[in-house]
Image (tube, rainbow, N blue to C red):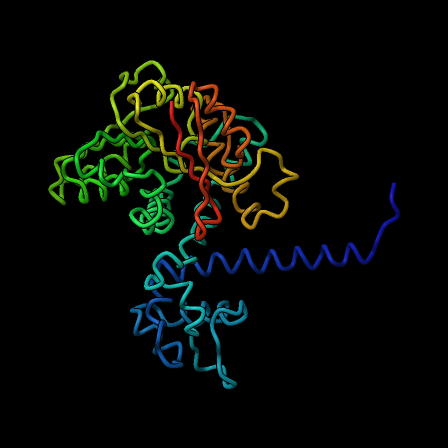
Length: 357
């Protein structure tokens, strides 16, 4: 056994202390986002807690304590009298809705959402099984915001151009299937942009599909359809050569039977069509992910959502960090002949694959 190193122990204790502070800060950042506090402080001069609370229409006592966490966390600045607080413009650039795709406060919401199922996850550690979708009441809300930043913001500028000529084909009219569509924001936007094309979204969640249907109906879109469907047997139920384009946006790894889903995609893509796949950037081997900028976050989200919702369906429990190596292995097993991987400069979380028969 190696000799005990007190300096190493001290450094690790500091690492844990930082984690406790940072985890707490995530909770407070989530609250700041959801209550609109960051938005109400953006571009404003230093103000008292009462003034900030009044502007945001919130309770002053809670706002004052929140400001304490924000100040000690290095997010908000306070004057020497501890009475006037200010959100620097440089911080607002990454914490407000005005920041659009750069708003990192959106992602802090995953911490409290996952914390809600901690007891259920601990039970799974002891007994196996999984935690079903219905135990995550806000997950689709957060995922919709996440998708709005990681996909919607670059849909036309970066994602569609991954396939040369795709925009032109959409203008002429194609059939597009999106699997694991969630609330369907992506194909709803595509349906608005390309009225001659027809879009179908499928998802396991009744709540998400109901929301997607209501949203598309309110926009009077008749070229988009949403179907509530368990994709575990998609390899058998998919219609052959039915769609020009099939897409999955961060959706394969949390399916009960991901390989069956991929085989169904191979079955339903028309000859000459393609499959567009967004999935987590990383390796299938943990040692290769040690320096991943989001490694701990992604393994945590995987353990407490992606993996467990699959296991709850009696599924494989592949997990978000299945990695590029296994992704390519599954795509090949599904019968596809070629895979082109793309990385977007602004997206540190995802790989983008254009897959063909």
